[in-house]
Image (cartoon, rainbow, N blue to C red; front, side, top):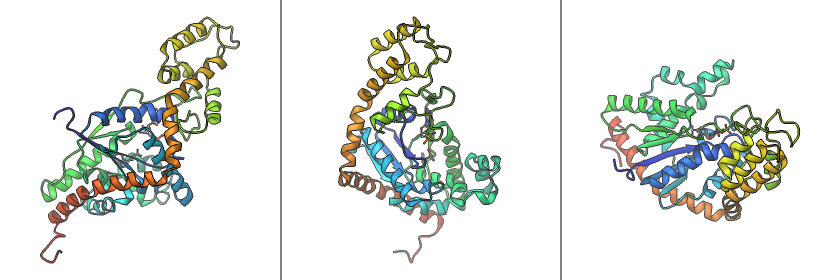
Length: 340
Ligand code: ADP
Ligand code: TRP
């Protein structure tokens, strides 16, 4: 396959708070944008039906969806190449899931970690809803409707793409070749950015993150509370740069490499305090993400534009999903002489 001939598809679940942090940016957004740049076709959708497994509050779901849409559109996709849509706007995802349920062995889904993790945490079977249990089958439908070559996802979703391949094979074996098997792409670099607590991976749920889009005051607080070198008591003490979160962030965010080098030297020699290093990081953050933050506000003030992008994305992908679903219905025998 020529390098620029591939298609990619990925989804993002509007769960949690829908807030995007710099771990998400360097771990998934940046590699995805680079890959999308070289691809022929890109499917990028909001997995709002998947979010129902955990978000069961109307306001919360609406807010998360809006935040995710605004955030990802602010990163500047080329709408001519990237089809951006909501899963729930294409009813066929759920319809194909219903069909795939019938070729999917129960044991395959019981082995999936979303379900297994819950049981291991002591949740009873009654504490797991069918949406969560059946999550991988909906994900298989999301993918197989569009037959992408590659599915870029985080490490945690690798198993789901493998299950998608299994389900596609079960279907193909039962009804004849219908689905192309997708391949997961797991990005290793930037895959686990450390959080501001200096201990665990940056994560929304742990509250140890630096956000991309929140207001400046909030971002300042997040940066100022970042863990640095615990052995350094006074700014005149020599400090440790290696594995120090604040310098890991500087290396990623600050485009003025000379300034970063100078700060590191002064830090090692005990010639600069934490506060100055953090203030410079805030400035670098505002510089690096300023254009996205500005676009976020512009888009937020222009809901018609968002609607238009989603409408265009939906109109582009729907015929393809309809085609595939028709093929499936023919294979399984739902299409017959009475079909109209
Ligand atoms: P969070 O853990 O903050 O709730 P999500 O689970 O919503 O983040 O993850 C969204 C995407 O960002 C996933 O593909 C995940 O692999 C990636 N991601 C999350 N946290 C990090 C991190 N600290 N470093 C790199 N990538 C991350
Ligand atoms: N489950 C994925 C996540 O939580 C989101 C998702 C849903 C997805 N459907 C998909 C990703 C299809 C890739 C392909 O991150």
